[in-house]
Amino acid sequence: MKITGTLINYYFHCKRQCWLFGNRINLEDNSEDVRIGRVLHELKDEEKDNTEISIENIKIDRITKDYLIEIKKSDADIEAVKWQVLLYLKKLKDKGIDKKGKIEFIEKNKQDKKIHYIELTDAYEKELIELSNKINNLLATKRPPLLMQQAKISNKCKKCAYYSYCYI
Ligand code: SF4
Image 1 (spheres, rainbow, N blue to C red):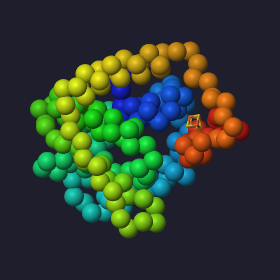
Image 2 (cartoon, rainbow, N blue to C red; image 1 turned 30 degrees about the vertical axis):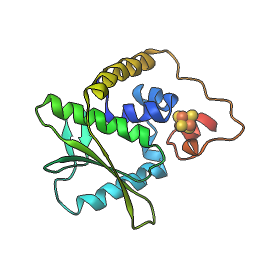
Image 3 (cartoon, rainbow, N blue to C red; image 1 turned 90 degrees about the horizontal axis):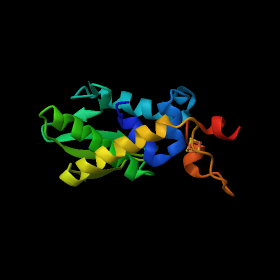
């Protein structure tokens, strides 16, 4: 299976979430968080400046002369977004387009935005190949990874589209 930005993001966020999404158990539309994300994108679309672009199986929020820009509503899982952007940079590079990555976190009810920059290096490219293999191996397993037995449900679960699937 071709790895998408969503899959690689979920792999870092939660292996179970990655498995569920990759195996087409899609509850995204029921999630309040996903709706907020969609509204943020619609607001950005109104600016009509190099807005969302689709290449193969990936969707890029914005491209400028120097940057590929990914917009997120929270910086709660920077590692997951970082790898999502690195995957996009690699896909563009394979098409002869060299860009740097810029991640904009626009938090709910906040005027400020945080910005992170990232560049695709040879080491990251090698890690992307390994990650792609790991994700495909995970998706090929018959059952999703088990829920962790935790005293408290983590915040990432409370905001996850699969919360009701996992806990109710
Ligand atoms: S609810 Fe929690 S355990 Fe279940 S898929 Fe989402 S993040 Fe993973």
